[in-house]
Amino acid sequence: MKKHHITALIVSVVALLMAVTAGKAFLEHRRPEAIVRGPGVTGIRKLSSWFPTLAGSPGDTDVYIFQGEESGGSMLIIGGTHPNEPSSFLSAVLLIENAVVNAGTLYVIPRANSSGFTHNDPQEGAPMGYSLTLSDGSSRYFRYGSRATNPVHQWPDPDVYIHATSGQTLSGNETRNLNRGYPGRPDGTLTERVCYGITELIRTEKVDISIDLHEASPEYPVINAIVAHERAMTVASYVVLGLEMYDINIGLEPSPKNLRGLTHRELGDATDTLAVLMETANPSQGRLRSRTGEALVLTGKDPYYVKAQALGRLYVPFDETGHPIEQRVGRHLTAIGEFAFALSMEYPDKPLEIDGIPGYDELLESGVGAFLLPVQ
Amino acid sequence: MMTIVYLAIAAGILALTVWNLWTEKDWRKQASAAMVAIPLLLRVFLVK
Image 1 (cartoon, each protein chain N blue to C red):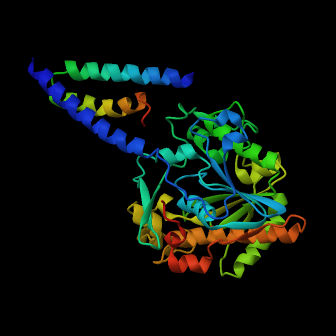
Image 2 (spheres, each protein chain N blue to C red):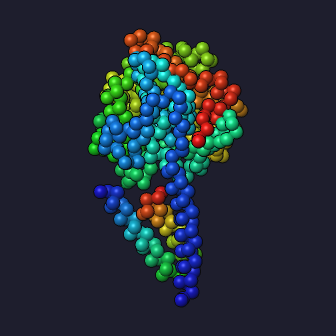
Image 3 (cartoon, rainbow over the protein chains, first blue to last red):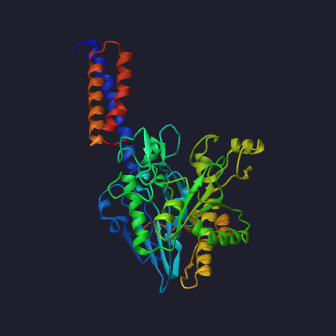
């Protein structure tokens, strides 16, 4: 054997070992974390039961159903549209594990883009996941995913993404962004088919109000805000006032008519649902952040953002206390409770009564882990 | 269909990279080829 063949063999073996090690970690990321079925869950269906083409695909996902004893209005919570926005996913998980519906029907999708949870974004330094400590001292691990569908499941990206319904053009990688694909297409990309499945769920079940949960970086103008379709503005206005009772300041933005593909625009236009989207402040996805890791995801504390605040560069208050996960989840959950109340007030024939939602002050005091159930 | 075409392209580049790794005489360039091969390998096997 020649000398350069020996070195080729050595570097090949080393490369293969590195590929196997990395590959194992990447494959591990595809395994979904457990979500414990709470006392109020009356059924779990796959999204493919509303759009069968999704069955067996990486886009199929669980839909948790809470059917109240009394009939009434209905609400859909869309969590995990962007799997790198953990308060969205965790708010849905806390609902599943704690909420009980007395009147009406609640649908909760914790991983709307289930493919996006199977990877994370290269070159972002994002953690693979984060752990929360439960009240019994045990811990639960959750994956930190990507903003977009896994390219292994949908590849290649076009140079320019053209939104099917409107012809709006965006950069090519937005083709894997669930919140740019609504109302979706039955014969479109995987992302568009997931959008279509969610739209079909809303149409079939005649969902009265749909709430899409998100997080935004502190330098993004739409933050700590509700974005509402024009038909949802009245109900959303009640929620803004209701949140004042908890000392939660939240903005209310009208859904722009010329920004297409997003839930608050397309679900409102394509169906009869009242479509809203909510944002909390997550520094771990911002461009000005310091070291990215599990601590930043959970505590929301970042000295660089404190400096940016002092320079007037942010759209949300930011001091040394940061924006911890319990505050972000608390904002979402409190607003969801207020939306149920506002829907019942505005449409008395469609009451929606939800009990068991962890309170804002309780979350700030005890943390998110205190409301998670242990996995058996 | 496009996915299959792109996978075929990735597999072809991977084959050429491995060929280059085994014919190259400078170990530093061999190491570079090995590093290039890792992401190609992961994509061809639909891991990443």
